[in-house]
Image (cartoon, rainbow, N blue to C red; front, top):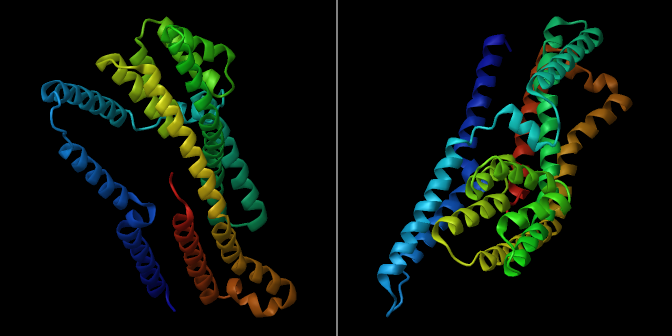
Length: 327
C-alpha cells in the first residue's frame, strides 16, 4: 500500500468521523430532543389562559419577565467566550495568565525532550510540546474546574436556604449575602465574597449576581441569577421564588445521583470494552511478541495501528455520549 492510498483512506476516515459528529451527535447528546421540548413548552405556555383573568396585568408582567430573561440571555451570549483567567478562576487556582503560560511552556519543553530521548526521533518529539503545553494543562484545568463545580452544586442549595430564611425573617438581601460570604463553605463562600465585594464597589445586586454564572457555569448559578434579576426588576416574593429554586436544585441532585447509579453498569461495561483491545495487545506482547510486533515493524502494520487507534477513540467517544446523561 503506497502513501497516496494511505492518505486517501485516512482522509476518508476523518470525513466519515466529521459527518458522524455533525449528523448523529445532536441526537446522542440530546440537543435535538431538548430543542423540541423547549418548543412544546413555549407553545403550551402561550396557549394557557384561564377565563376571568386580568389579561392586561398578566400580559404586561409576562412581557416584563420575558424581556428580563432575554436581556440575561443576551448578556450571557456576549460573554460566552471563556478567557484563560476565567478558566483558571473556575479551577480555583491563584495563578496569573503569564504564570500559566510559563508553566505550560516548561511542561511542553520537558515532554518534548523526554520523547526525543526515548524515541530518538525529532518528528515524535514534536508531539511533546502539544501534549505538555496544550493537552495536559487544559486537562488539569478541566478536571479541577469540574471537581470545584460539583462541590459548588452540592453546597449551593444550603446557601439559598440561608437567603430564604433571612429574607422571610425580614433581613435585607445584602445582609444575607454577606452572611454566606463569611460563614458559608467553600467554594460558595469565595464566590459570594466576590458578589459582596462587587456590591461594595457600587454595583447593584442584579449586576453583581449576573457575574456568578460566568465564574460558575452551572444551571444552578444561572437560575439563581435569573431569579434575582427578575425579582429586582419585576418585583415579587423573593423568599418563595428562592425556596422553589432550592427545592428544584435538591431534586436535580437526587435525579443526578439516581441516574449515576442506574448508569454505573453501562459505564463499567464501556470501560471494559474500551480497555479490552489494549489489554489483549499488552498480553500478546509478553506471550507472543513475534506475532504482534509486525504492527510496529512494518509499514502496513503501523498504518493498521493508526486506523485501530482512530476506531478505538471514535468508539469510546460514542459510548461516552450514549451513557453520559445531562440532568
